[in-house]
Length: 88
Image 1: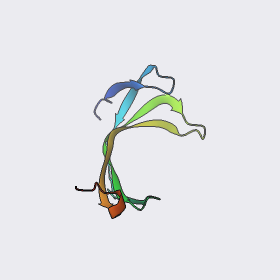
Image 2: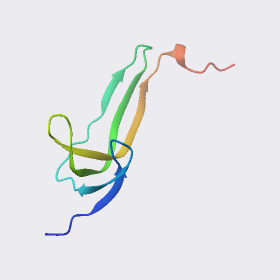
Image 3: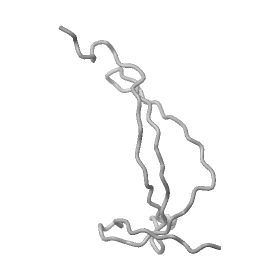
Image 4: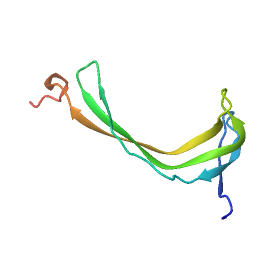
């Protein structure tokens, strides 16, 4: 078994902590669609690079604390004409 890779990340208190890299075994990527009250429809999807587990730290339910490395991509599906920039 290979040695566990670690990285330092900010912990819940802001101090750096060592976290263990946890590889993804399986995933399903899906878009989420949001209809906003102004009539716009936006689709968003997380872009996950990886996960880190912080040894010895747990949430209030006793689950191990994980950090997510990544971001979010989005696409505007539709916007009412009233919100679009008006050409002169």
